[in-house]
Amino acid sequence: MKKYKGMYIIRPDLTEEQYKNVVEEMNKIFTDNGSEIVQVDLWGMRELAYEINDFRKGYYVVFITNATVEAVDEYERLSNIREDIIRHIIVKE
Image 1: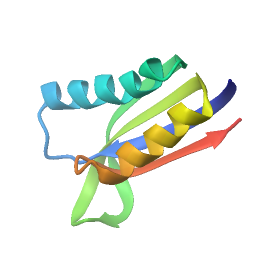
Image 2: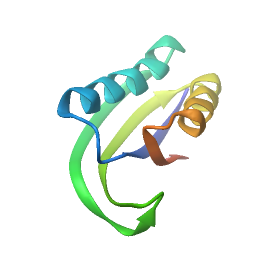
Image 3: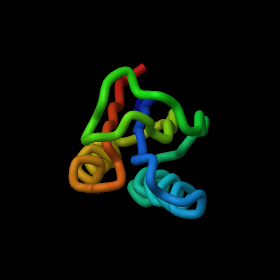
Image 4: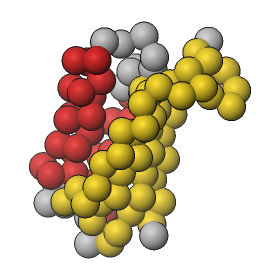
């Protein structure tokens, strides 16, 4: 396993409960694939540098994980197809 740092931005028109569910589901991707979440920082609602999909704000989540390649691939795959995530990134530290 290698250490990764990632971030994703959730669309701003969800409820607080829906934000929590998205964060739990994204964390579950790593735990289900034999990895561990080291730290999760909920930055909350922030202005975007530029408009994305007609949104000017987004709910930012930054995380650090010790992950397997399979977990990172699954994170990328699901982040691309989920409609509630407007941007994501993960990089090896």
